[in-house]
Length: 258
Image 1 (tube, rainbow, N blue to C red):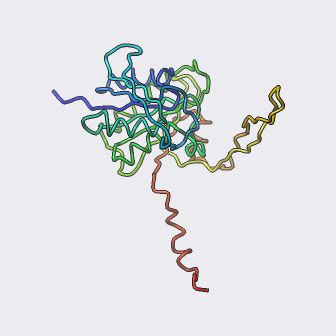
Image 2: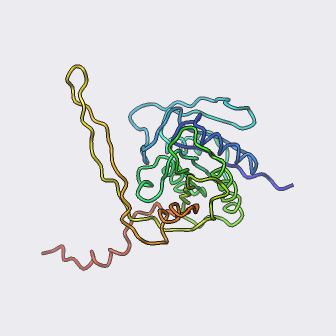
Image 3: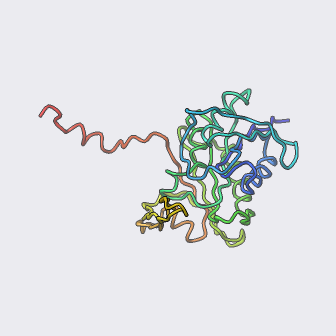
């Protein structure tokens, strides 16, 4: 009988969030699951790591004891580092992060704790996928996300994710039977037009809430934003080599001795 794959599950919404509980249930149908996830929400944390304070791990049982789970005081990237260095006896066959409450398409990948956890796994040489549902509601319907997460992880384990690549998967906020399929895409060119809502405490001290509007500047039909807006699941291959290779020749033409 073939050995079951070892699957590391993490997220950025916290270990009790409905998204990760759904993902755990889905992954248990595929392999042996180990969970290491933040003990509180870490959305927008990006690839932050804890260097100026201690980290704590606690073995927990949330739904049942059919998987090994640890709650971590650190960031999503911390969770993966601790899982690899302190908990797992071997590298997992795959790391899955999510299911995030809200989109991580386009420029959102830069800020995402969900995707940073997946990228940290990729840096460690572990095949990794981040999953996000385009619904910020805590009690969102994760039926479609569960279906496609299961399907995509099975395919990734069978085919193998290309080296030095992590998959960023976003699922539209629509019923399962309304989703048209899966599209492999590029990241749309988009950004947030941000503002700060300035307020004052009763003692007269200023404080700020970050607000903003997402603006899609990309009209292409090969982007994640187009796919999601047209009821497709988007898969964007992401790399952690941030070198702008296409500009090296231009920069080499500069005369730095002038």
